[in-house]
Amino acid sequence: MTEDEAQQWIRDRFGAEGQGQSRLAHLADLVRAEAAHQNLVSASTLESLWVRHIVDSAQLIQFAGDSDGVWLDIGTGAGFPGLVVAALRDRPTILVEPRRRRADFLTTAAGVLGLSRTVTVIASKVETAKVSAAIISARAVAPVEALLASAAHVATAETRWLLPKGLRAREEVARARETWHGMFHVEHSVTDPDSLIVIASKVSRR
Image 1 (tube, rainbow, N blue to C red):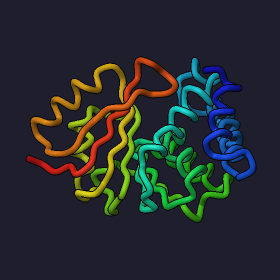
Image 2 (image 1 turned 180 degrees about the vertical axis):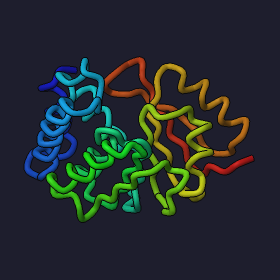
Image 3 (image 1 turned 120 degrees about the vertical axis):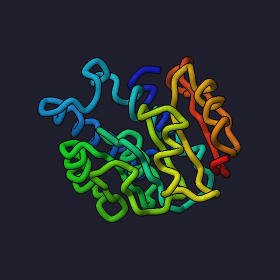
Image 4 (image 1 turned 90 degrees about the vertical axis):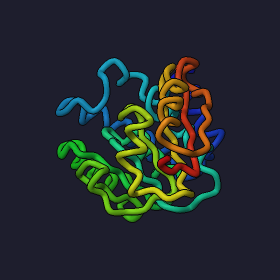
């Protein structure tokens, strides 16, 4: 997938007339500009932001179902997937980012993108968050078992977990099943044939 194809992918699925596309283009500009001040994403991916980060984030929305509840993103970093989701979904979104400089960037970016009404940034680890989420995402943060343990207190039995992973996703799910009940399955990423997305629901500790 090229950068042009990635932008077309967004237009095809989320429309070309709304604010989503322009917000995402602005987000890409903000990330590139901030890269001069802090390491938000790998420098090697700055020229492929639409494929490597924006579409890779946006594809999670299709697995969220019709829930209009709070989407909580753990370890949002540069805004992926949390700010992308907020830009396209226009629903309450909580970004949990423990690194202060990145949290400050997310707060500023949400304001610039016109998302302050729906986006809340929590500048701490998820273990200290006191919220309840309908959807929880985490991209390149920790193994599945560790994510479930760290965020169980902000989830309910109805929460859907959307966890982008690499080739070892099925191994992580197998380990998580030793400690957690739930419905787990994996989907292939549209941006990388070697990447998988773990989707879990009805999760509870054994």
